[in-house]
Length: 270
Image (cartoon, rainbow, N blue to C red):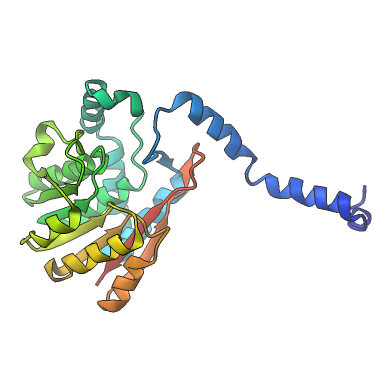
């Protein structure tokens, strides 16, 4: 039927428009079904990023750090191709009581961005709040070990209230990383070192997130970068950036073959 004529009939046109709109979401139902059958994850969903999304990520990090785009891409692919890193994670998962809740297909998502920031910034101190299993922890420590090989020594500190958190942080990664157990704000209040890279990924309430930023404000080094894992939900890192005269950008993830729409990285920098 001619579209012009079809539009005259409200019900038929209504059904046509619904069918048109649903095309944007129908594939998600198939992805949900596959995920429900094949995946063991319940929270902190992991996924790969599209090639285009990785290029967007590399360009954004290049803008923030003034580093060459091709160098950023090199670091991202370095993390993706680190077989020792993946083998170490898989080994720990297989031997862990939590193996029934974790997939063995290691998908790093936005953590590729965290890795690239560490590689290009060469920070002396990295702090991440809310380590959960420790996937981000071990990725960051892998980057710090690469930096160490190049003569740049750095240390990772993760915080988590769960005494069992961070179980993926093992082997050689413990040379440059440790977990501080307890309430994150309490741990940060007692922290005395200058922070070069801070990643908020703990309690995702807006007030708690903002309180973390205020707590570490005076600990940030001159060119420190602050990353927010919850910036796709709250504006607290943006608010903090405005308050402290810092610049702010947001990177949105584009997962492939996964129903989750993706989170992102809020970036606060000088």
